[in-house]
Length: 91
Image (cartoon, rainbow, N blue to C red; front, side, top):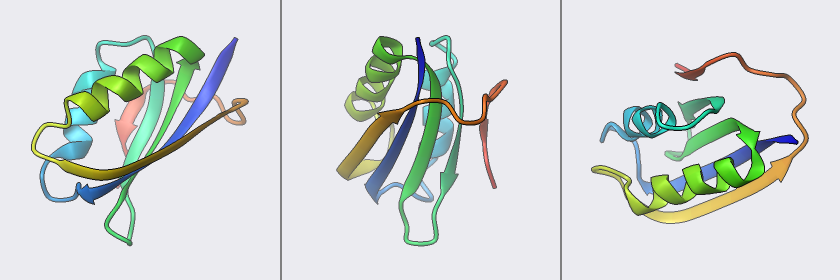
């Protein structure tokens, strides 16, 4: 059953191509979603797919964050409210 992952990444995550890194990782998984900068300096991720795939995707991001330096990652899984058709950066 497909789920929705919501994650917040904190640390040095803006201005270091972290969102682009997440999109590159997403290209390797059968998922859809969005990633965007938040006004508090963090990055927010929504991803949809099979639960095990989403958790592997999240682990890939945290283990390979590119130039970002993560100090905190929080996440939760829930039912999908609005299905997404692609994976993209929101501006």
